[in-house]
Image 1: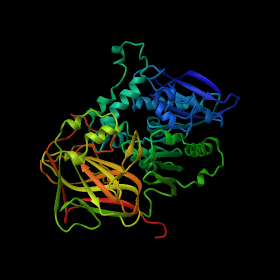
Image 2: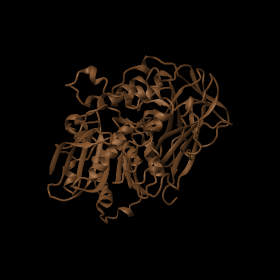
Image 3: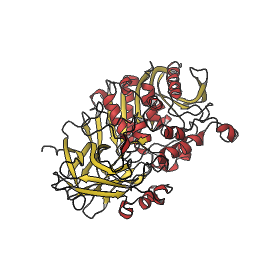
Image 4: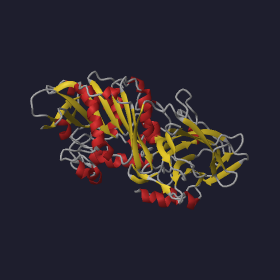
Length: 551
């Protein structure tokens, strides 16, 4: 393998970024796999994130986090180009993550790679997380030589599905991400005075706080999926609801790509990408679209789903999303006595109440999932109510988007609602799975700020209410409003004898780490929240139940 370090890529504004090139030693031209990001093209994976490196099925000295392992791909006749985004690593300039400027630089890099003497002119993009989301942005600009993309575990809607869940700032994740993963790799760190470094980055943490609603700032950073036309193989993680899980389904349904596939796995954020099964799927896709190999890729069904029964997983191919055979099943909240979930509408009215008053636990520093278990327990602090179904008679598969309708009020007016779907076994214990930075992840989550409740009727579909987020919908103290909450899509088999639980609270609930919402300025707190149930209300959990085969 030939390795070229610190190669300059000129940008359209007269500047440059630096990259490393990995390619076969044999003379010839090769399709190119390219990625651009802020995490450091020169920082070895095993040094930067040793825990995840040890869990990876692919390992080598050339690996960096969330990008392809070069030796594996070069051995199969690909060139790999790894770029330090402007202002990070070896590339000079100002850090400006998720920016139109960097999308333009990405475009420039694609066309540069296509013009190199070792390139066939066919460029593919692949990578995890930030390296995933930015693929949608540049693909929407339609670079002439971009031939295919594999965006893996962060989707295109930065606003709705990553930064502001239901309108609530996900500061816990975003602040940590910018500080630990971006600024720690700033160009000039250790050799440039700190006062100069402070002027060399746009503070993304401040920007996301100053743009609560979907305005021009966000419009420049949320991609028009109809402009994405290249072949696409996108991958999502059921266990990463807060990591823009929903956006991958939007990308699959809304892009203009003639050839597109959706893979949804489970587990941690990193190791699924490097699994040998995923590698085989990635290579089959790129071999067809970048090398012209007739390998049956076009015959592969477009949707590949991991069906979860607790930690047990079975894989199944489908032809669409949501599944056409979905039995949309309402489960009604009933607060007349003990909060329960019922198959039928309750006969009498009921109220479930919990406190939204802030306390020290709400603002306590959280550094691991164990902190969340001790600081946000609804059972101990009266900050949530759980509605529990009767034991299920037969196994129930729930696969698809999930929606919650509520009639609700808050004595303080505006408030933030947090939703968790849980699986409770016959012994009363919750069934959890390994997830994104959290080995005790529940079925799925949802969020809503009441003042963000206005629906976008053009984009909303059965099971997926999409919010406009463009202006505040004022809610007065004690005003009763009907809201719809988009709960993260899921695939989960509730086994016979288990109970379905929906917990609704006023703050992050157990299992939420690392997607936490505890910014004192952004959060809407105070007063008491009331959920209304009974005749004439529509406090209902809508589940996408998949009938048993042959039933």
